[in-house]
Amino acid sequence: MQILQLKQAIVLSLAGLAIAHPGVHEPSSFTEVSKRAFLNNAHRSLSQCAGQLKRNGVLERAASRRAALFETYKKRSLGLRDTEQVVNTSHHSSLQVTPNTPESELFSKDPVCVLAPEGEVGPFWVKGELIRHDVSDGEPGVPLFMDGQFIDINTCQPIQDLYWDVWNCNATGVYSGVQSSMNGNGNDSSNLDKTFLRGIQKTDSDGVAGFKTVFPGHYSGRATHVHVIAHVGAQVLTNNTLTGGHIPHIGQLFFDQDLISQVEATYPYNTNTVSITENADDHVVQVETEDSNSDPFFEYALLGDSIADGVFGWITLGVNVTASHDTSATWAATLTSSGGVTNDDSSSGAEISICPDGGRVILFSTSLGAFSMVTPNYLLYTASKGAIEQMTRVLAKDLGQRKITVNTIAPRPVGTDAYFVGKTEQLVQMQTGEIANIVAFIARDESLWVNGQTVRINGGMTVG
Image 1 (tube, rainbow, N blue to C red):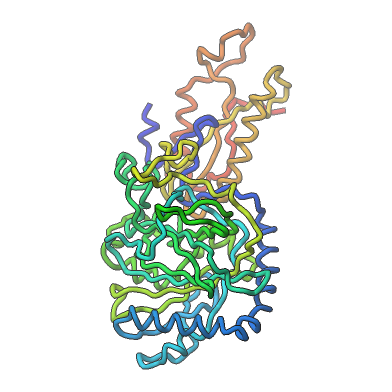
Image 2 (tube, rainbow, N blue to C red):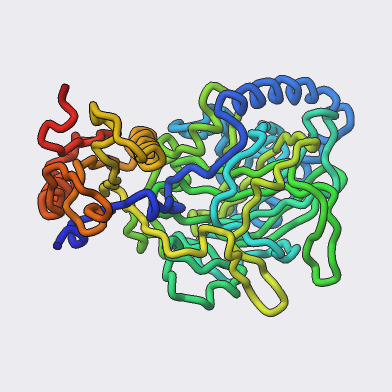
């Protein structure tokens, strides 16, 4: 059969179904409703902290620190982008900024992002990363200096000795530390030993930590982002890695779309031919920001005359340190003294089919589930196929923003050798070639408007 050669078609059965990293939701114990309730309540709590933080001098020290960092890294002071709205809006400041505007004025405004209680860790977290400030490791791209301040939403105090764990893909959309068909060259085992754009930093008495890194690129189905895990109560081992403690937050941080466009126009970002997913179309941004007060976007200033001179980004993060999401922090690999070691229990290490933007996902069910006669001894079989049909509807909505269609084909019994085993009475059987014709149609561009459907091909078997 030539079906496997059809453009961008993925044919999946229940046993073989694998969800790829790009654009897919990670499992979470929190519903979207509970996340939004948390964000709204936490934002109100944190808003009440402003007076206390000001009295304690935390805000003033934050402004002075960021001004000093900006002065250290800048080549010429340029205009600040200040967050006014979350998605699909330019992040320009209301200040009248000139090259002579004092940094103390630029950095005096300090918007706060209240983090959702449990975001998406993604499939490429690596345990055992080193505690270090410079994580760039010689990677090409736009320099990025990140400055984060963590505030306890329950006490209004800076969180001292929190360990900020960050990682992001490189300029062409590849993560270090993992070997996976979802991530660059899946046959490159040497990538397991690489550590670029990954690291951990401890917050100081003002709850502050920072990194020198490289602005992330993009890959299919996701907006440009930086992954974040917060560790509380951890200890440092002699090899400069962490042990113990708990994880009160897992999440992701984002950048202004205008800034991303500037970066993507430069080399080597512009060598990536994968379509860019914008913030407004990213499912993580939508969950974080819809009907909530969360604003998981970096404030930023450019460090020179061009974007190539670098970006200074900062954000203040409100965290509930009493929460623990250790069980949700699944890791793809562990960095050891001998190099990276794949976590065999992680799906990211497996060979997983990736559906590109504009692709087709085709699942298989059965018409027996809708047959007017109850079929004996088929309870588990028909129940599992019913699950596939429900998955079809959900995935069609989740992947629709990437122009990926998801449909299920539900034929009548097919005349294969396995079907005839142990049966004395047979229905008129379909042949595999007849099913292939339907698959071929759904996989073609002409089927664009067929989405989220269970296509029953049974010659009227389920009528009446």
